[in-house]
Image (tube, rainbow, N blue to C red; front, side, top):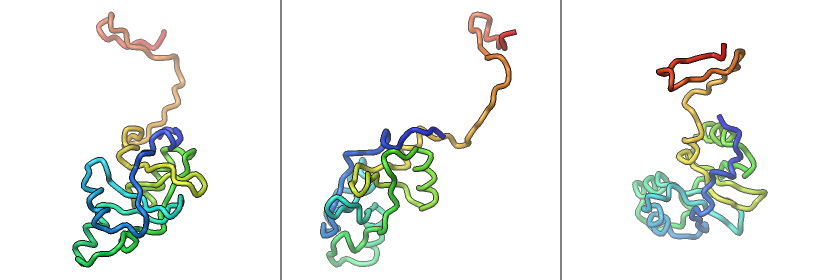
Length: 149
C-alpha cells in the first residue's frame, strides 16, 4: 500500500449537517449519487455521521419526524490529514466503515471514502526485493526480455 498522506484523497467539499437537521433533509441530500455520507458537525467538531443505511434503517423502523441526531453513528472513527492511505484503509477495516471524516485537531477538513482509496490499494500487497540487474523489455527485439547480461 502506498504511504501517501490521506490529505491527498479526502473529499473536502463533502456535505455536512448539524445534529438538529431533519432526517428528511439528510435523506434528500443522500439521494445525490455523489453523496455517500453526511458528516454531522457541532461547531467545527465531528459529532456523528449519517449514511444511506442509517436513513433506510430509520425509515424501516418509524415514520415520525426526528433530527439526524436520532440516527447518526456516534462516536465517529476519524483520521488526520497527514495519516497515510494505508492507515485509512486499516482503520476502515477495523471499524467496519466505508467513510472516515478527516479532522485536523478538532477541525473537520473533509471526508475520505473507501471508493476514493480503491485506486491506491492493491488486492494483494506485493513486496519484491530485486537482487539482480535491472530487467528490460525490448519491443524492437520482438518482446525479448533481457536482464542486462
